[in-house]
Image 1 (spheres, helix red, strand yellow):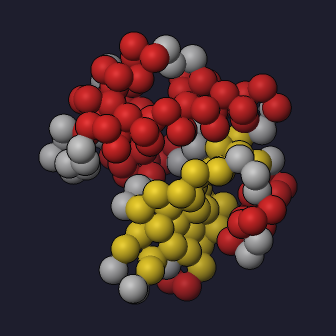
Image 2 (cartoon, rainbow, N blue to C red; image 1 turned 90 degrees about the vertical axis):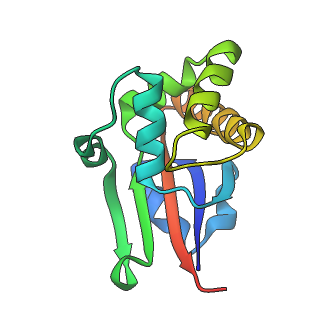
Image 3 (cartoon, rainbow, N blue to C red; image 1 turned 45 degrees about the vertical axis):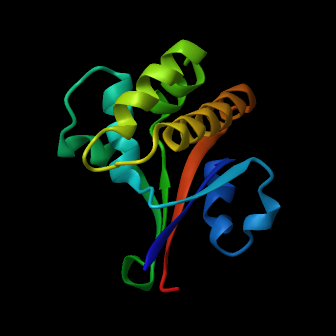
Length: 141
């Protein structure tokens, strides 16, 4: 079982439509195994604070279907702003720290690619006055 994870730029009004028509959203990145938990850990690292469960409350759920097998969460505006301001040096440092957490355990280059993608999406969202969203779906394949 895999958790599919698409991160995309949208307005609140349109964000829930991603579940039915993802191809309509041009600014997106596709990953596996990323949920609000892992992204909240990344945000804690970016802010140089210890992760705590209260960070999860910042990720507003817009869609919950099939008993939680399909979800859409909105990334916190403060996180989107923080992401859009990351420098290349900071991306490298944050990626290294995030990749080596026990919970993520990704190769550093994969973690860095994710952070580069989400930073780019955050920058596009900030420039256009939109937000960044996370779509998750359980894939039994």
